Image (cartoon, rainbow, N blue to C red; front, side):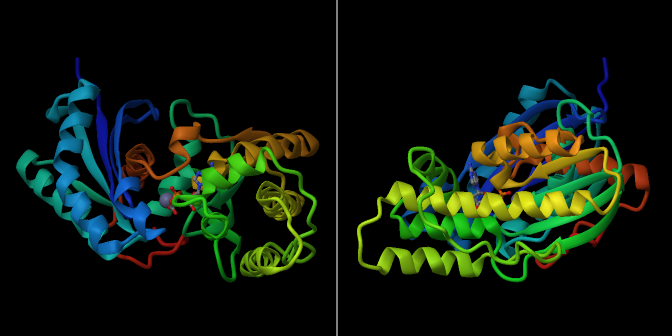
Length: 331
Ligand code: KG4
Ligand code: ZN
């Protein structure tokens, strides 16, 4: 039996991830080689080491994903590979690998905008996002709000003026001595603390743009100040401030049009606290909440493959060349 599928390759940052996904969004396999061990000594992603680790892992990861999926090479309709945004060296490893495989297998190669992959990640496993939808992307590189009227039309409503929320989590994690990556560790510490400190909620009363650098600085000042505040209370207060801002912006955006769904994607969407707060907001506003499965909130090949299907349907698949500075409104 043939199963039309797309092979998705993600290597824009610190994960080598390869997946095989059907048109319906069923993930037949998704294999990810994490680089946490490579970068943790540096407290963040070391780009050259990331490139080398991708070189070492990408072919075995492709082989594992193909093997586990049960599909034949002749079932592959395309290879979808992240073309940007991201780190140039890591992007080139994925793009060159995809180009070689495409030539060897005689399969077309599509260059995917990583951000479009995130936007579509809530549709993995089962198609459930109903449009029009409000989508908040909260990742290490981006914090933005978009309106989508169908799976392919994107209107940018707001974005961050400085740091992304994931970056703030990572920096606060480092300040608290929690290592890399900071996000999940900050969440765990926050869960046992009390939000006693009234950190600023930047730009909470105006518009749909975000700003997180002032909040990060306020946490740094608190840590330098006299008076012993427990680290878990600082973490809890920081998370409370972030959630307050993110949820308020979603609430405001939901009043600007009749959305059917609220969709939250990107690495920070793995946060249990954010998932809980989003559930309350969706109930309050009478919209359906769609979150990606927790393991596919962070970077993965499955979302890249799913976005690959959109490009195939649109019939104007972008060429697979590196574009480290690609934006959300680019195809
Ligand atoms: O989407 P992603 O994997 O990569 C980018 O495209 O940037 O997002 C990574 C970000 C990091 O900043 C990481 O700290 C954050 O997502 N993150 C989390 C959690 N898991 C990952 N932040 C909060 N809570 C989590 N559980
Ligand atoms: Zn990402």
